[in-house]
Length: 125
Picture (cartoon, one colour):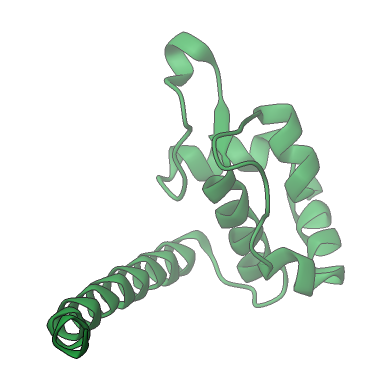
């Protein structure tokens, strides 16, 4: 029940939960700091690791559990999906996979547009 209580606290400020986390680009955060930043329990974060929803930035067997800025944002997304929308782990995995695919396609489209626009800009000079 404690995981649910923590997730409910995240839901109280859902705007913060889905907002992109603005940490240092190369920073890594310990499990304790990640729990504090996301308002999740350490147990919940480890559960999400075991289910493959997130991955630690370092080898947990050797270095312990450390997470990068992108993973902190993902943890906030997971907490919001669970607490606000009642999405289970399987549904969360599907949603996160779709979000990654959308981001990949956006990047691909942007690169294609830039490649198409480059010769036009060069011809104008």
